[in-house]
Length: 207
Image (cartoon, rainbow, N blue to C red):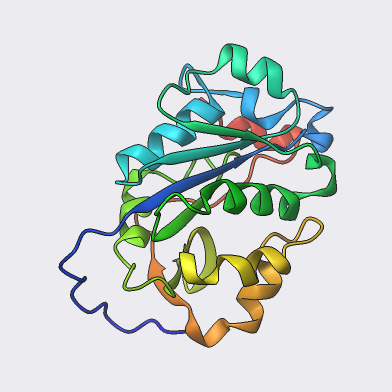
C-alpha cells in the first residue's frame, strides 16, 4: 500500500460524490435499523450525510434498505439522492452495487464511501481522503495506525470491477485486498475513530 506524501491535486476540481451505505437492519441490535439510531440529537443517517457534505463531497447519494419507508419519513435528506436496495439482507456488497449503479452516468469522477454506523468518523477524515483523488482510477482509504479503514475513495474508472466483486457482507474488501499496492493510505487516527455500532454495548458511543 502506498503511504507516500500526496502530490499536488489536478487543477480542475473533481466531482467526488459521497456514497453513504445506510441499509443495515441492526441484526445484533435486536433488529434496530442503524439509520434510525440517534446521535447528537439527529438520526445517524442525517449525521453521516452531513459529514459527507461538510467534508466536501457532492452530490451525496444514500442507500437505504431496512425500514426504508420509515427512514425516508423521519430523516432530513433534502438535497440527497436516495436509492433503496431491495436486497439489503444479502449484505453490504449489494448496497455498494446499488450505490455505484445510481452514480453511474452522473458525471462523478469518484465515489467516497462512508458507512452509517461509524459516527466517530467526521468531516476532517472525509476531506483528507477526498483530497487523495488524482484520476478516475484513484484508489484511496483512510488508515488508522496503518490499518486500512473507512472512508474509502473509488475513482469512477474502477466502479465496474468493484461492483462485480461486491458480494455478501464483504463490500469491496476482496477488491481492496487484490489491489493492495494501488491504495493510497491517508492517516486519520488523529482526527477520527473507526469504531462500528454493531452491538448493544456499542451504543455507548452514541451521544
